[in-house]
Image (cartoon, rainbow, N blue to C red; front, side, top):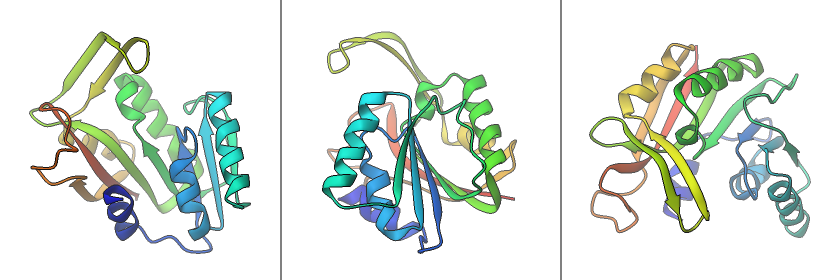
Amino acid sequence: KIEKEKILDVIELTKETMLLDLGSGIGYWSLLFAPRCKKVIGVDFIKKMNEMARERAKKEKITNVDFITSDIINFRTKINFDYVFLSGVLLYLVDSDASLLIKKINDYTKQNSRILVRDSTGINGRFEIKDRYSEDLQANYNAVYRSRSELINLFSIHGFNLVYDDDMFDDDSPLNKWDETRLRFYVFQKQ
């Protein structure tokens, strides 16, 4: 609820808004945004996630959303989006792939388009996890928690300027799970 309110208070969706959700998973954010937009496209590389998202859309009678199975870096479209939403995906991309993704986002956005980034950020600089086992995932994983300044620079070099950023939760919130990172919300605008 806190995240939903924070994000919806900051962005301005209209019935003309075209929104792309990269790394859409089971469609939570896509389906939240869709009633406020003209069209939402969710992209995730896991076919089963997209099937679940389609079922949720059908159950909720949301018809202006499509879910596409594709790697987010290799995703192609001719649509020029007003908003691109990235939730929890940058931390799983090495620097070169994160840079490539942002560069490609330039191809399907127009001037003044906004990139919404909901991602965990290293508090005291960059924080990396390498080959750590996760009980939840039942697998080893890697993650790069970039610092705030790293994220700002990464978007800046591709023509996106920071227009808003904030911690998702207050400092004393029990929702801040780790000492090294904080979930943050950033809004970048294409120049």
